Amino acid sequence: MNDAAKDIRIGTMISASGGEAADRIKQIGHLGFESFEPFFWQTTNGQDLAELGKRCKDAIGDRDIEINTLGMFGNPLEGTDIDKETLQGWKDCIDNAHHFGATCVAGFTGRLRGKPLPESLPRYKEVWSELAKRAADKGVKIAFENCAMDGNWQTGDWNIAHNPDAWEMMFNETPDDNIGLEWEPCHQMVYLIDPLPQIRKWADKIFHVHGKDATIRWEVIREHGIFGKEDFVWMRTPGFGDSNWVDVISELRLAGYKGSIDIEGWHDPVYRDALEMTGQVRALNYLKECRGGDFVDITAQYEGGDPSLT
Image 1 (cartoon, rainbow, N blue to C red):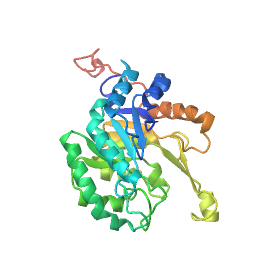
Image 2 (spheres, rainbow, N blue to C red):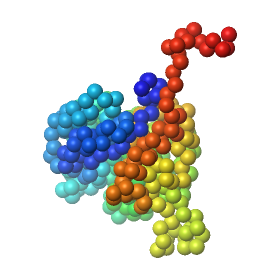
Image 3 (tube, helix red, strand yellow):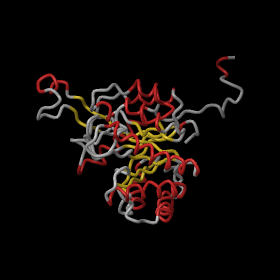
Image 4 (cartoon, one colour):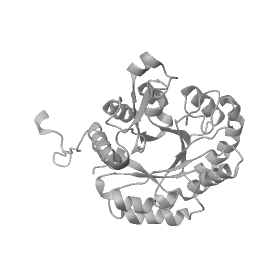
């Protein structure tokens, strides 16, 4: 694949909490994924991440596949045992990202549980200012996923980085150049926010992109509203939701984004269980088409320019 085509890779997330990431790469690495995001849920379980990174790279072998982002999802701002493991997990991922070939670690900011969002900012600044410096010293970026985890402005358990008003406050507290977003349209659409203008405004803070979409069920909203018993929105695998990913990828390209779009599966209400990988491979191929399809390069053939123009 030409370097220009590699500017935006299409890949998928793979669980790493139990050390299974390398085995998963061996299992699905032949399907056409161009990148993987190994992710941990709340804890690394004390794994040797240097050794895990080596096994993942060995599983990739000589294939043109990259790992540019690790995921560490939990609440590092609170003080329970699992929260402390999450905070340590962030440190370990930052310190060992290079063993995977990664330059970014992504996850949730954390949150003071049950408190209005602004009350988390002092603790956020305390924790993330230190982690930002640790990451900068190692050439690593930190990216916060824009997922509310069922929280809102008034209360929540996991994350404050789910709303653009929160981003303004967060980045004011931590103006570090290496702190940004792991962005996806889905998590804005579930709050009826138009995601596309965000790319234009926040492009310099988008360090990683998740491939996840949503279907907004307007007929349910008109009849039942957004707080009734009926789901007014479904999280979807790309290609099955409302987003035009041609537009999303075009905006990312125009903004100069270079990195990967890693599919976040396991949410689609239709393509799940036995159909999970069917949906993911469909999303993989769909996103490649939205990226422009097969790369066409004639520069080597006509180094002096296009002869039809002379």
